[in-house]
Length: 237
Ligand SMILES: Nc1ncnc2c1ncn2[C@@H]1O[C@H](COP(=O)(O)OP(=O)(O)OP(=O)(O)O)[C@@H](O)[C@H]1O
Image (cartoon, rainbow, N blue to C red; front, side):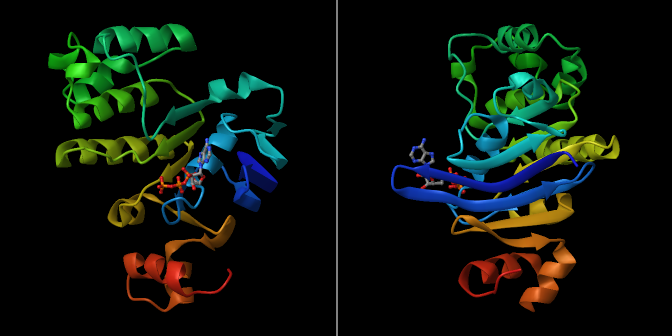
């Protein structure tokens, strides 16, 4: 398996966000991490990345516990929900900076062409539109060749053409046997991309399974209504 999580707890002050998450993420699948706003999706992702330190529990990535050993991070490509890069640097400078930091082979040229970013390479980040910034972030995420890819709200601000490109890119990575975790509130995107659904509610994994199982369990006619039904009624999976 790629990731194993046991009894993971995270509090922010008195706020219990994750209340005992047990989860196995298998290689070669696309997992959607779903749940209402504030349910802890980003907290779970950041725990896997070592950016949030759990209060209790164990996380192992690629068969190694992540505690006190940060080298595993080189095996993960991460697209954050909100990327905070210095506004005054140019797109090509940012790409070079990230390449230098990672010091791994990268394939940014093809991705720049795929998302039509050539005209923006000499522009400062602060002058870009939201969607163009997101395309730059996608290039930064996909230009390395890591076995695990984590995408937090990857579709934000993308136009239809860029969305099609992103979907092709994700499928291509999956076909190479990579493991991909995605959070998104766009149910059509999730339905098209994910083969496993994880639904977080009140600090626990409330549902885990594929879309067929979700429809069967909720008795709803389609995916969007099934997810909505999990929030309001439903029973533990
Ligand atoms: N650093 C922090 N300090 C205090 N509280 C935090 C911190 N990070 C997250 N939280 C709280 O933890 C809860 C879960 O946040 P998180 O961002 O994980 O939710 P989410 O499921 O990703 O939400 P969304 O769908 O809105 O992106 C929220 O109530 C949030 O306010």
